[in-house]
Image 1 (cartoon, helix red, strand yellow):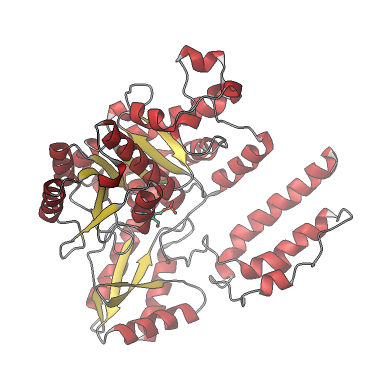
Image 2 (spheres, helix red, strand yellow):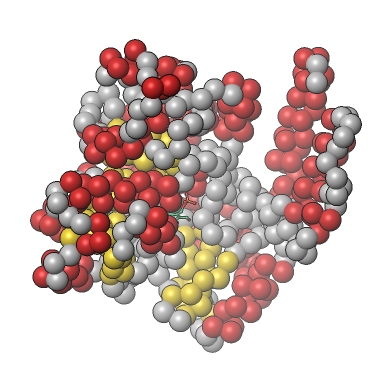
Length: 461
Ligand code: PLP
């Protein structure tokens, strides 16, 4: 492609993207293709001759879009949001064009310094401890691929720390609640931690500290080594908030690493009135939230902070001769390769930087507050309806409810809602009870969309 062609096609493609952002509201939210259907539309053999770019763009409409479930639709209420925004999309274009590797400061200083600085801004914006800023220390933040990666890292570091203190790897124990995300179990498993205790929850699905204390005491009595506990700020099922402060106290008492998983709800901390368990969070050893869920920054952008970066860097650092350089040796720069499993890393901070600048903190707060207000409005409608019961408090942007007639009626209701096509919700299960989750948080979702969802729900009852 010549530079002139790139310019022309680039303009056309940005037009296509802008057009998609406008017409996504009119598309059915869920893809409705059969398994294998998209693949069958692709030629069996790879292209030998170059194809015109027009053909590539045409296939976006003809082949790709039919197989896309539209997470950026205003009718997106499924799972949690994975929202994006125009500044984020444009930053991704620049990141791809620069194609720079930020594995070390020396391989592109701007990547490292902008990331470190923007994450220090976020410490301020989310009301987190000053010591988590790389400019203040001893802690610091790094952008990871996903919350699962961050949680895995926390487990690796905690295991290493326990072993540095003399534990045998066989004896290390991890704890979290029975409502924690599956990434905690996976993180512990990949970190080769053999023992994972899923601690009981209370009526609001938050971890019971007394049950945690008992489990830790039992393991100590059995000669095992409690090494890490993960609290959740906003569980995936119902957005329950664990008593992070009480967990922090137990962690301190027994020398456990305390990781906080705020994958979804962490974005809400930008609004002071939505902050919960802030004192407990301030005593955590590590904390993760996904800007790629609810901060208008497209996947992937998971922000991971540690209160002390030394054990993380110790666990992750290997220095082969081909990576040695004067800047690293000076000890004056951050080399993010030592904060993660992969060596290479792309310029993910650019999109976060652009989102923060293009919206301003005020703009982000405005949208998050609006999502929370709309969820609360929807929760009110659920409470008023005789055929519906809420199964958990409305938390942040999430409303969880079921049909009074039980599981079959709840599943039938979810199917009826989704059959409309303009909205998408999912059903889940807790303690054998099916319930429907409505997560308000897609970037273009407005009051009109949530009202439309309510009319679809009430018409289906
Ligand atoms: N933790 C919680 C509480 C989540 O809700 C999720 C995903 O929804 C995750 C972790 C996993 O996030 P990721 O896809 O970034 O690994």
